[in-house]
Image 1 (cartoon, rainbow, N blue to C red):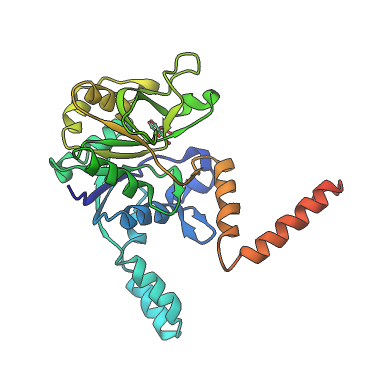
Image 2: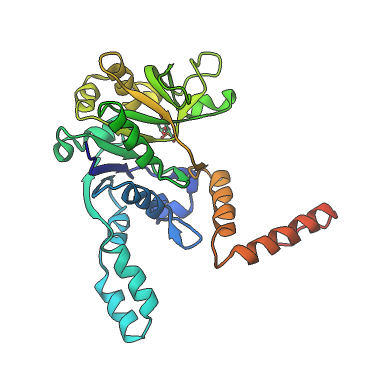
Length: 300
Ligand code: G1P
């Protein structure tokens, strides 16, 4: 089954990035000069997605506007002979079909996904969470789509191994390998943010899912879970008890850009792979490392 729709929840308040997020949606904060949400949308497009459904909230319209045309700016660039910039922003405005739904109360990820039921209907769809950027040769969502096709169009959750001390930040899955390469798992259970003492495994999802339309039935059945919120994890846990749900160890490097440490790490790494900045960033890092190792205090 060809998956055409992807849901990207963007309704959160982004409090970990205050004060920047007082006026700017967290998703619009750039890594170098590209907003983080652009990377997520690009992953979906590179995976073959044709329509993005943002689950949005009030005061975050700039996310939708970013993916729309901006005729006043286009005119300005044209009149000033800035053809390269014009081409760049025209391209962003025509990347993909965008639909937006409002999550009027922030009651959790499960609740956010449920708001898209009318738009998704019964088809399989992808979910990408914006706090994790994943870069690799194959887009992560595309890898999960292939696994879903291989295993009877069933749901697939993207997973990675994390240190035991960190399991309480994630949805953790348990299951048994179905292939010799030890990459794909048939799921037995999924738990939201378990404690290290009680976790079934260290297999965590960074927020990449291929789901089937029946997830909405489970989302309607779940009660408030971890953090008092309606958790997608609880609906997937219910679902994997009554139908086949797989999990897959994707390949690619993942950055946890939901906090300032991961954001900083991503910025450094993206600079090192940006042809415009690579040499400059390399020399700068070497110089700073040299200064630091010779005990020189860093000047502000
Ligand atoms: C959400 C999900 C969790 C997942 C995580 C990935 O949690 O509920 O299962 O592992 O995203 O970033 P949040 O980080 O929004 O609390």
